[in-house]
Amino acid sequence: MAESTNMDELLQSFKKFAIHGDTKATGKEMNGKNWAKLCKDCKVIDGKTVTGTDVDIVFTKVKAKTSRVITYEEFQKALEQLAPKRFKGQSKEEALQSIYKLIEGKEPTNVGVTVRQPFNSCEKFHIALLNSCFYT
Image (cartoon, rainbow, N blue to C red):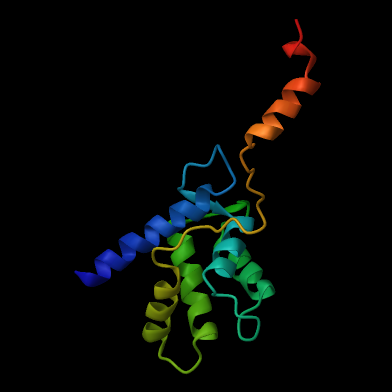
């Protein structure tokens, strides 16, 4: 029962990353950019055992030949290929569970995004003075 919950959380994370940055995405398929973002944000890429190149190669292996996206099932196959590489000292099953734990419940981060600060009353006054539509 607990493993089912983990798989539900894994699916939710897949969907969140799949729709990230694409207003037309349904959450059923993930592109290569979002796959790489998931691996980076969830610390699957550690820079030593798993690199960005490894992640790209696995994506290319699991996707259909003519496709540019992966489904949830292909996503799971990709994790199965990365898990033993990321967690070398563990058995294949333990490594897979460890990689699931890295991803479960995570969502895309927005690093480097500028948040607009609200105006204070003084700034509003100066904008009103400069804007000709406020003149009568």
